[in-house]
Length: 271
Image 1 (cartoon, rainbow, N blue to C red):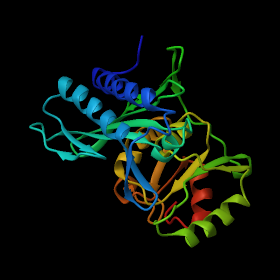
Image 2: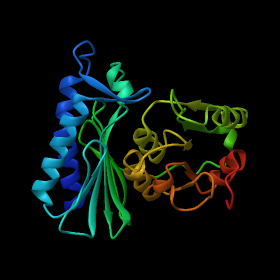
Image 3: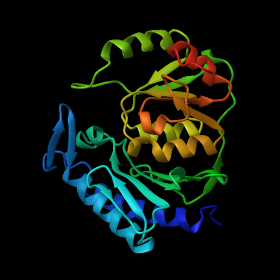
Image 4: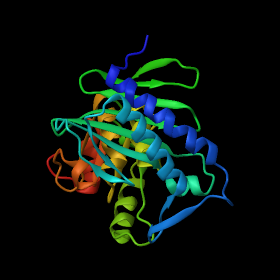
């Protein structure tokens, strides 16, 4: 029996609808149609088609909700208390290079507060989902569901940390290298996989112990923040320590014991 509520089930159904588009186009590197949104920032035809499938599916089940989508932007709804936040393809650069590490991310706000999230790893067929106060879960590729609880490691030296690097056209290269130098000297490993949504999902699943990145959008991280919180972790703004990382796009996340240690290396106040 699934632990997903009817609302989360609606989001899971929509994620699977979008995934069919991405699975069909994945690997067609020579034929993939894409355009440039900015330096080293691309959108593919698959992004747009997957987003439309997700939007259509959600709208059929929750017609009054509002939407914030990476490609289509804002769509107002008659129900002003709920809004879906959609990233149809987090990890576009990986997708464009036939790198099998990307995901669909769908979050829902209730009364302006992040309430639920679904992250679907299309290639591995792993469905991560969480809802406020109800825990975080993973449905694996065999259809088996298990609850996610972050490991309570306290020794930073034993930890595997995820991050994201600024690329061409993004600011903060020198700052990131300074942060990387501080962190890499204190941990057992650092990974840069190219999908913020999956970094947060994997953090919730215990595959990483901590994560930091700057310059993200709300659709990159909204669902993942819910997952981490419901798995027992904490996500804050890296520069202020405030609970507004989904708005600032600059975040640091870990369990309660590790967050002050990682934050100390990165200069996060108030931890």
